Amino acid sequence: MSVTKPQPPRSEQDPETVPASGTKEAKPTLRRAILDNGALSVMFAVVFINLVGFGLLVPLMPFFAQTLNAGPWQVTLVFAAYSLGQFFAEPLWGALSDKWGRKPVLVITTASNVLFYILLAFAPSVWWAIAIRFFNGIGSGNVSCIQSYVSDMSEPHQRAGRMSLIGAAFSLGFVVGPVIGGFLAHEDAGAAGFRLPLFLAAGLSAVATLGILFYVRESRVRTHTVPQNFRATFAEARRNPIISRLILATLFYMAALAGLEATFGLWAKARYEWGPREVSLIFLFIGVTAALMQVVFTRPLVRRYGEARILVLGLFVFGLGFFLQGVNQIPLLVTPLVMLAALGQAVIFASISAIISKSTSPDRQGAMLGLNQSTGAIARIAGPVMAGFLFSQLGADGPLWFCAIMCFTGALLALRVARVERQMTAE
Image: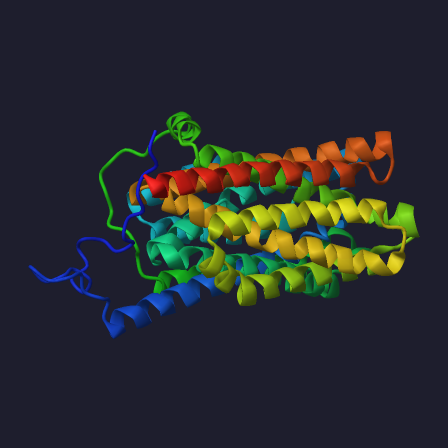
């Protein structure tokens, strides 16, 4: 089956981009370009604000759950419930954004998080917290909609670079958020000691909602078509020789990334007797390295070599970081090797998103990007489980070998994507 040709991101109803009769297609006016860049800037700011709100809770959730008398397995359920909510939400919100437009979906999902953060602050038990985190995951499952908005507002050659800025907003949010959360939380006060960070997360979501409502303009014309269901979207992706491999690559690399996040602290303690302070500094280096790569280097690299080649390189370097960490015995090399892996990981998100958007018609981008994000949610559930099992069965380095194999397998899939793209271009 042939892959859908990339379509122009502007709607036919946009009078400022419709060419005059008998002339070459007109370029967007300066005013339109300024509006587009302003809307995208607001979108990047919204992602950053949302991720700061999410990131400030990530290191606090285990301690918050323990104040509700949660056992270790219930603490993991608090995390898994969030990813499970995203698994169901991403394809749903993506498809609805194809039908309703991006802006209404972004407003609804972002505003819902205000409610769920407040409810979580007053959760009476760990089971209530798990349920609220599930619905919080549904509200946060709008990444595919954000990606679709950026795709709508970008020409094909701009998409990877702009997707990388979305990735940078994620990375910076994860750097800033935990620092703020750790400063505001007071564990000795019990559950009440975590309410201020939760209220701040709710406030940031409210600010993001207002930003979308007043400063983001719609990028799609509303349609009356019925959104495709998940099964039909999955069948379409499976038939596509590019998208099917990209979704598998997402499954493999996200499982590796989630496995790293879940077991790195355990590995560092077993290998080098490191504690929370040393581990938190390592994650700070990861976030800063990934953000710099996404903001400064991804766009020129993609312009020169193309998304598919950069994806192959990113997956290989990410896997190489795990492999070298497994054979390394020198504590001083841990941070440089982690930063090497972060350089590879930083280009994967943007490259996969850009290739999917180019390989999908505009009215199906939300659904297809949602399927890809849903696959990532499955990986975020399965990756930590597999890494934890291997840690207990094979020792501290077991998860590293697992993550390396996942990334190298993803690189082989991406290599096949590059070959298919070249064949289609030649035809």
